Image 1 (tube, rainbow, N blue to C red):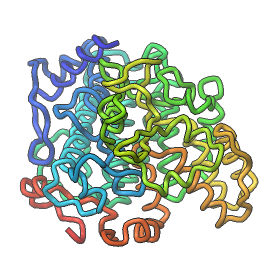
Image 2 (image 1 turned 135 degrees about the horizontal axis):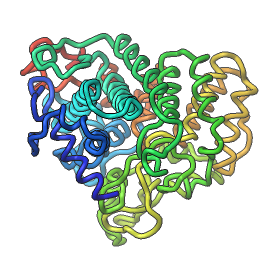
Image 3 (image 1 turned 180 degrees about the vertical axis):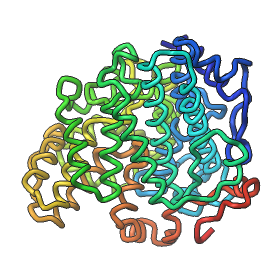
Amino acid sequence: MNKQYIISSLFLLAIVATSSCKKLIEIPSPSDQLTRGNVFNDSATAVSAINGLYSYMYNYTSVADAAFKNQITLTGGMAADEFYYFSASTFDQYKNNAIPVTDATNLSMWTTMFGVIYQANSIIEGVVSGNVSDNLKNHLRGEALFVRAVSYFYLTNFYGDVPLVLTTEVSKNSMLARSEGSKVYEQIVVDLKEAKQLLPIDYNESGGERTRANSWAATAMLSRVYLYMGNYADAILESSAVINQNTFYTIPTPSQAFLASSREAILQFYTNVYNYTYIQNSLSPQTDATTAIPAYVIRDGLLSEFEQGDQRKNAWVASIIYNNKTYYYPQKYKRNSYSNAGSPEYDLFLRLGEQFLIRAESYTQLGKLTEAQDDLTLIRKRAGLGRPAASDKASLLLAIEKERRTELFAEYAHRWFDLKRTKRLDAVLKSEKPNTWKSFASLFPIPQSARSTNLNLSQNSGY
């Protein structure tokens, strides 16, 4: 597996050897002289190209920290009310929701997500004229469409309106203006619908591991997108389709959920060659010693949301004593560069628990409260808790918000996006951060360096 990913990253770089898009995004310099046509004239190199796309997203980007490695989770968690960086003032701009337009982390997120999109576009274009089977072409196109849709989902939820880059045409892309968020969502739905039809319904393409998107991954992502769009009927249809695949997906105990072998996993990122997740390596104190300085500390508000007996707190939260005080931090994954014992873990990107919460919320919005309670109860049962007391629509929506907070914390900015889409961001953060919160901070700034090279990029209000 490790060798496969190392080789595939080289072929991925070969795809972009003939063009560049640096005025809008930064693309790593190619390390091979294969043309895109040659890559897709052979099934082995074509498969290596799609593996390279996943590797670029998670393992082999040109910077140590990048969007899908850890930045989405870290910036979203700090911007919301999940955790803060303890060791220094390095990320106070996120804790205080005061991100400068020149912030390097923000630029890295923007750049790497557009880098992923550009490389997905290159695969989408390349497979058309490739000399491989139609079945393989469909799979590769479906995966590239899925990855593009995922990247745009995060871009538009962090930045609002963003350039809609759908080709590798440099002259067109380098000066694109921002498209309205509604148009971006329309494209996300189009991409996911097509991906859902093109992708296989099993994991045979990845040797049984859940590290490449299949049709159910596209379906799961589509259910999330429909929830965010307020299309609750379709969100129920899509989430139900995934939930019903009980030969693939089940709800394990909290301690089993984040293992590489997790049957809750719909899609995972294959972790780096050291077999620990980048996100846990960031969140954990950087040594096992009891005198270690905490890295990221969970806020008291999140800690207080865990009910007595909630097994998720025991399984997913760890503590460290520093200067005679106990600090708590997320530990959904147990392995990091300082403690690499135990079962292998892959970074869990899409999972079944979220699908039940999507369906519960959608049922509630449509007035099907009993069905919503049933779904919420299933998630709570895994945590060792009982049926929720909430019985009317308003209280049930708040109960689901609470359950999403304790279930999905420190996972790809769920809390930050939840507060925004439910229009609860101002109410929550005015209370949590009364001295620093400003409403315009609901959108991150467009990086100044991107605007300097593309004069058609406008800035978000307030920056």
